Length: 143
Image (cartoon, rainbow, N blue to C red; front, top):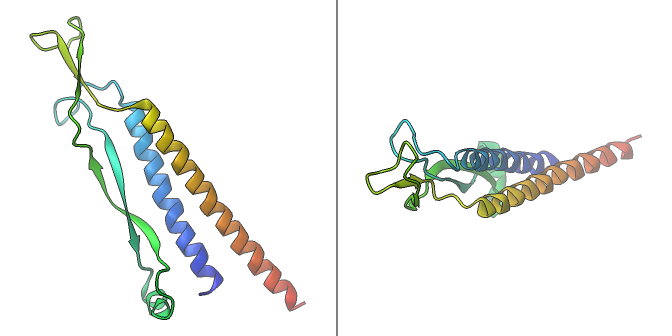
């Protein structure tokens, strides 16, 4: 494995965590949304991570080093949780019983996911910094 493989793997993780943070942001922004173009309340979205192999050259190189893979986001899926029913007879989207269907999004859960995504992003950014420092130190050997 060369130093650029490390950077490619961490770069794939940075991209995946950025997508995760965007989805969390969308969930928090729509925490009170009762109308969507699809109809009904907003549905919480989750990011699916999948390990992925790198390009052909990297894949060929991995034959000797199994287990080293990047990450990608193959899908963003909607939660299957049912909307919360909140009694609010004055709301324009209230049904005949006075209940409004609101997204079942827990702000504490979203904040926890956001902190986790942030820490994972920082860890991968630090891996890239360390790989860069190692490459620069290797170049100093030739002086």
